[in-house]
Image 1 (cartoon, rainbow, N blue to C red):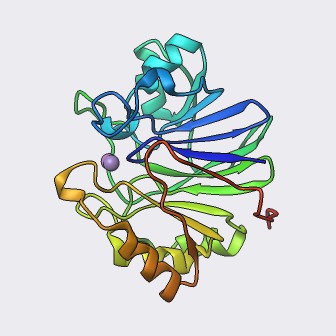
Image 2 (cartoon, rainbow, N blue to C red; image 1 turned 135 degrees about the horizontal axis):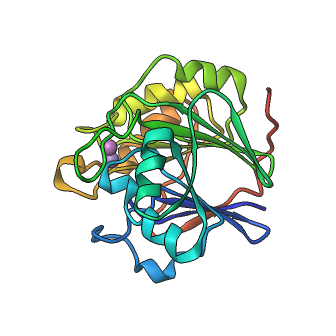
Image 3 (cartoon, rainbow, N blue to C red; image 1 turned 90 degrees about the horizontal axis):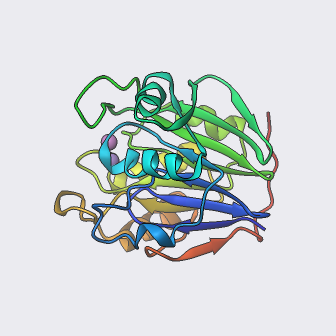
Length: 235
Ligand code: NI
Ligand code: MN
């Protein structure tokens, strides 16, 4: 069974059969995150965009373990220029891995390197991890094309930002749940900084009442087993 573990902010790991996918590893500099050494060694790192609270330690982890970062072309090239191993791709189709596939998806946000240079467009990720479909929205505003993802895929678990200010807030994230129709939603990207303080319980109540979706609030360092999810990709 697949296990999803929350490392604070927008950072998650998916684990199964000794295979680890790491998403947006903002560990150093995040006061609420555990020590970097406690992270499992990943087989693949997904980075949604170049902002430091997402790119985080990705380059360091890639260099240390010789594992690739999957990101949009411009951001991947930046990571490569810093010595990381990369897979430079883009939105539009599935990229195959031994665990399944990853598709980069639209995100309404911006993206730049830590030096402030252009880093391509920001993305979210749709991930088929051993037959379960996970959606990590990245940093994004609400957009209507989330409906297409919900129509085309049976999303088992969606990770959605609720912090507001830089991304969707609670109300918009609940609307996103209605468009995506996932079986489970996990809120992310809140509480790390003062401007994105939110009460996840409010999101939980609203998501369950207005979108009829089970919401799991993961504390940093806690995990959820997806054994009770049944899914299959529609396309
Ligand atoms: Ni951002
Ligand atoms: Mn962010």
